[in-house]
Image (tube, rainbow over all chains, first blue to last red; front, top):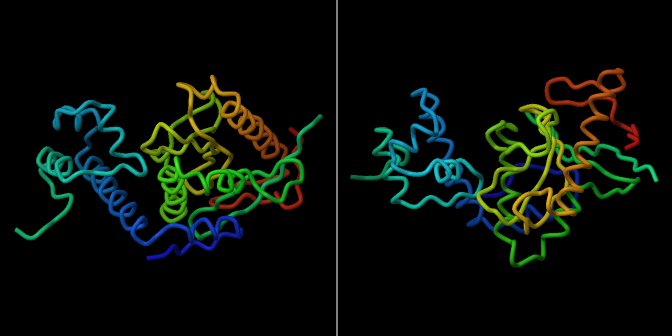
Length: 93
Length: 159
């Protein structure tokens, strides 16, 4: 998967080309998870503070879930899913 | 000596426009200088690539407030890209969900940017430019509408 962005700059085009498909895939999946959690919080009218309370995590840790490049573990995803009562990632049962 | 600045368009989609600042007639913008500085840095490669990918994502979905952490002062629009790392910072001016002006950045070796001459220099540059941008908007030489800043072509800002 490559970028659809066409920068008006050869420096930036070259930099974008240096990112491997695997690196893009990892980033995109983590970003998607983060956005899905954000969407659920919005729908439920919940704050990050409440999410921290429900998951038993520190607020600073919860904040990191919404930052670019955060690498979610399966354990964290499972804890968040359980706390929110909503699927974040669906897998075969 | 007075510093001069121009705005360079890096990317423009139907949704988001990405700009960066060029100082003193340089053809290389601040964001391009940042990229050149870190592209070969093995130690910060993960953070560097996260920033590249984050900027692409912002162009695709929008420069939403949640993607940034406020830096600078309460009354300016200086922000740092919110990446999950304490090691590398990229500073920018978040004008709106649809307009982002990228500045420079660097390795974070101190607790706050104020303690680093390099990082505070980048933040101060953006603070000064933000002020000029607001003044130019007030006097009508530039206009900001939706995802476009008009009037920047050939405009030289005196910092």
